[in-house]
Length: 132
Image (cartoon, rainbow, N blue to C red):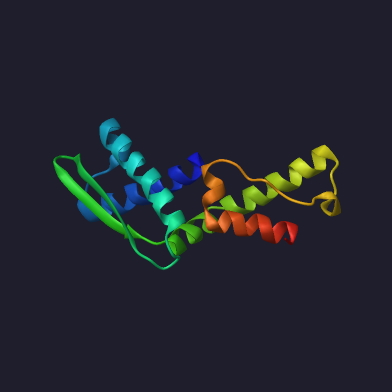
């Protein structure tokens, strides 16, 4: 989950720096405000349809400037893919299975826990991997 929050933070820090001329990475208070909104955005996107635009808004982020943008679940999935996070998840599954000595045909079900397990693309990735 933290990796996804960080990806969103970096994305919007760049967007808001270009759009508004404020860089949240240079101010701890602005950084905290943006990180908090990115975490909320991640949760909201997981519950929304793929193409629904979801707002992100940070009041008084820096220099008394309010900043805002839009993002879709599709964009989140593309960001996860382009940054290699989906491949890393798959590598982690393979590594865990190799270390435990479990073969694919020995897996009847997979129980995912934690907030990241609610992200539809990650659930799809695990289902596709195990063919279930």
